[in-house]
Image (cartoon, rainbow, N blue to C red; front, side, top):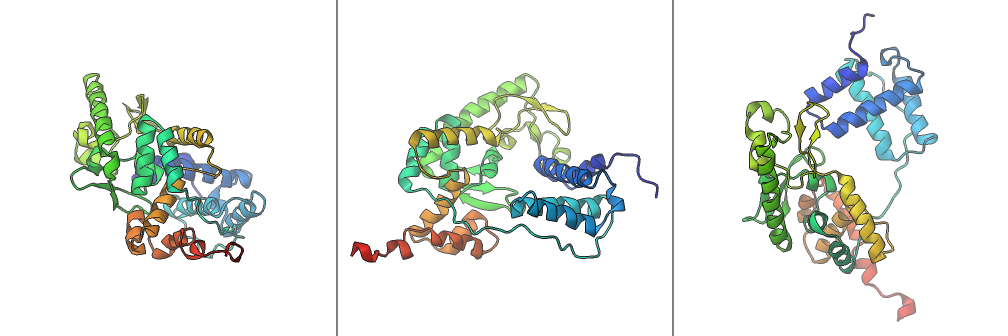
Amino acid sequence: MVRPSKKLLDRVRDRIRLKHYSIRTEQSYTSWIKRFILFHNKKHPEDMGVAQIEQFLTHLAVKRKVAPSTQNQALNAIIFLYREVLDIELKEPINAIRAKKPLRLPVVLTREEISKLINTLSGTQKIIGMLLYGAGLRLMECIRLRVKDIDFNMNQIVVRQGKGDRDRIALLPRTVKGDLQKHLDRVQLLHNDDLARGYGKVFMPRALERKFKHANQQWIWQYVFPSKSISRDPRSGIKRRPHIHASSFQRALKRAVRLTRIPKAVTSHAFRHSFATHLLEDGYDIRTVQELLGHKGVSTTMIYTHVMQKGAMALKSPLDI
């Protein structure tokens, strides 16, 4: 069989970019495909099949003890390789040993703990924390927001290309509006300075950069939370200002947890968990909460009913009677 002269991983990258997948998906998929090939001693995927895929996935579950989501990500990457790049349809089902998904309750903070954390954060990180809790956003959804996604008049945020590539409407908390507007005033000054220096072209999703040639310089398309520095885009090579990195908020949150001495395993997602739980405690309909969170089905949202300060938590122990 005559194989294309272009390297396999370069072909994978080309296909991913043609389908407009994110840079994070590109990095993840190429990494898993590389691991799959190395696991089988650099054997070409065209010379392998379902049996080798099952061996690799079983190895991840049994030897590496990876999380179910990690194993699924590896599987998706390999299926993408065969279907989209090699044009090979895997006719047999893949029956690897699957990583067991542990039953875990979400980490939920009390309203007092939320208040302590947000007040310990400062500047941009405080605004992000307020949006994560006040709007129930995922961290990446928040830092990818663009100016046009914030509607101050309607008190809402448009979350675009969220999980599952779905758009949704989220709340814009009134409490954050003043700080957010002042923040955007500073960001606009930064954008104007970038334009004066010959920069100011932001990354555009999908094929919008070709369709609207000058839109990438417009204010409405700029990131709400831009990086402090201009860097070279890893795909196009163009120098521009990306959004801030997720790790900047994660570091700030870790410090805030340490300073407030909250004895919980707090991550950025705890804000979203707390948003959903507190809404349900306040009597809001579970389907309304489902829509605000962007869950595909109400069964995912139901997990928060188990951590509400109602139900079993509202009962008295016989020891306390």
